[in-house]
Length: 211
Image 1 (cartoon, helix red, strand yellow):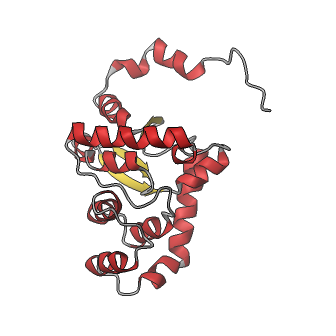
Image 2 (cartoon, rainbow, N blue to C red):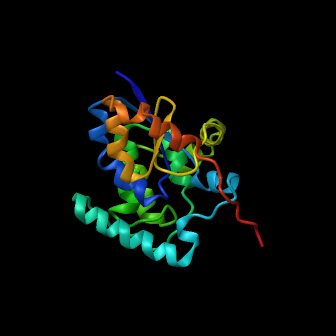
């Protein structure tokens, strides 16, 4: 069975939505979860996240509420966004990125509405996951190095956002491209078509001059 790399960050509501439907992808491929720091992608591409542009932030969360309702996915919004996802990312890595761990961490934010800085809920979550000393687990050099390497590898592979499903050398960014990734796995000929090849090589007609 083919392996699909799933790049995600717990800060992304769209990554949470996709996490809730990953079993549809898993019917066609083995999923390898790859936690990365979304802020690292933004910094590399000199780009702002959707929550950093005020009107876009409103649109983003209105869309997320709508999509969750339409797909029957439970949702609660955290107290603030953006937030620092590093504890979640490092804990996922420290616990092996198992599906159960990844789902528990996503639910902590996007179903229970907690942030990693909410001390009591965070302690309870870590206890449920069998982590006696969360601070020590998150501080392990190999955990930090893995997150850094994951993010660097994602940048090198050409990623710019999360969630992204990587099917061979083709990347499918966003919750709304889940069906496209599945179609690719099923051998849909559109992905080898001249039109799709043209989409990958379309030249610039004009370039905006920064002010």
